[in-house]
Amino acid sequence: MPFVYMLHCADGSFYVGSARNLEARLDQHNSGKGSRYTSERMPLELVFIEEYDNIGDAYSREKQLQGWGRAKREKLIEQNYEALPALAKKIFRT
Image 1: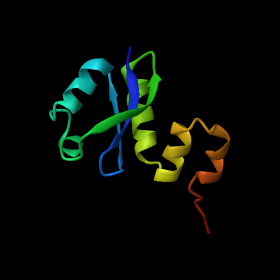
Image 2 (image 1 turned 30 degrees about the horizontal axis):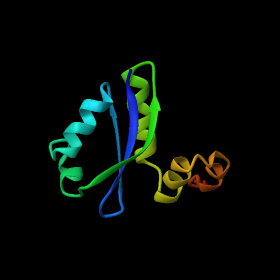
Image 3 (image 1 turned 90 degrees about the vertical axis):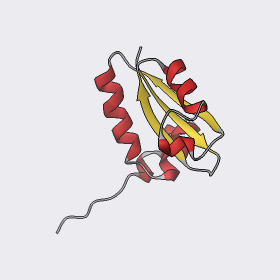
Image 4 (image 1 turned 120 degrees about the vertical axis):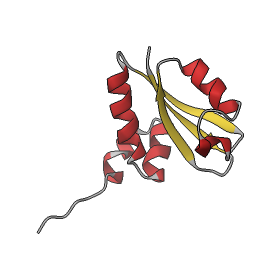
């Protein structure tokens, strides 16, 4: 099953990714071969996982989460879903 995951990096940042095989992908990250970003920010901690029926849906969710700010990601990790709408970016049109 495909997954979306979030890693907490040693520098305090978050890395969001998707994978068909989560265990193998985490092994890649932890060995320093997962991505340039995470290889420079080890050690890593897995802090969030969502499972999907297909990789396309997982990839779409990955892109959505990558667009979120830190505060919104933290509330998702905490499973504080009620706080998420208030953290949405407001777009003002004139």
